[in-house]
Amino acid sequence: MRDYVIMTDSCCDLNAYMAQQMDLYVLPLMLHMDGKDYPNMLDGSGISFEEFYRKMRSGMLATTSAVNVGQFEDAMRAVLAQGKDIVCLSFSSALSTTYQSAVIAADEVIADFPDAHIYVVDTLCASLGQGLLLYLASEQKKKGLSAEELAAWAEQTKGSICHWFTVDDLNYLKMGGRVSATTALVGTMLSIKPVMHMSDEGKLTAVGKARGRKGSLKALVDAVERLAIEPEKQTMFICHADCEADARMVAEELKTRLGVKTVYINYIGPVIGSHAGPNTLGLFFIGSER
Image (cartoon, rainbow, N blue to C red; front, side, top):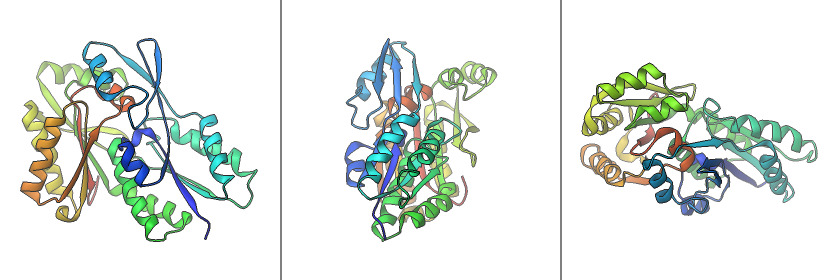
C-alpha cells in the first residue's frame, strides 16, 4: 500500500499544533483587509487572531479568496514527487471555490504521475466541523486505512458532522450573502440571536431563534442532547470569534450536563471570521443527522 498525505485548507480552523500532530498538509486561504493581503495561517502568523478581531471590532471589513488552482498544483506535485498519494478534504463547496480548485488541480497534476492517486472530497463542512472530520480521519489513517479507503470513509462520515452555531450580528452574514437582508434586519431589530447549522448540502441555514446570548448558547447544547450519538464517548470541538469565556462556559455545560469528556476550543480563523463576525460561537459533534 502506498503511503499518502491528508491535504486540506486553513478553513479547518484547527490549531497549528494539532494539525502538525495529525501530519496534515494545510493550504491557506487569503484575507484582504485594510489594503493588505494576509494568508489565513493556522498559527496566526499571517495576522494574529487578536489583531484580526480588534480590526473587525473597530469597523474594518474584509474580503476573502479561496485557495487557487496553482497553489493546489504546486502542493500536489510536491507530495506526488515523494511517491505518496493524496486524500484532500476541502472546505464546503457551497461556501468557497476551494474544492473546485482542488479538483481541477488534481486532474492537471495526475497526468504526470500515472502510478499515483489523488482523492478530493468535498467535506460539506466548515471551521472546526471540517477540523473534526480531519481529526477523525487522522485516527482512521492510524488504523491502517488506505488512501482509497479513507476517501470512502470521509464521504460516508461527513454527513454526520453536526455544525451548530450562533452569531452576534447577522449583518456580517448578510454582507457575505449568507443570509438575506430581510433576515438580518428583522433579527437585529428584535435582538434575536439566530441558531444556525450546516445543512446536508453544506450551506448555512437558520434553524431557530433565541432571546439573548445565554439563550442562544443553551440552544447549542440542547442540539447536542437531541442529536449526538453517545456524547459521553465523543471528542467535541468548539470554535469562537474572540469570545473564549463563552466557549469555556459551553464546554463546561457539555461536561456537566452530558458527560462529554474531551472538548477542544480554538479561534475561528480570519477567513470564516470575516463572514461570521466577532462573538460567533460554533459547536461540532457527531450526530444522527445534521
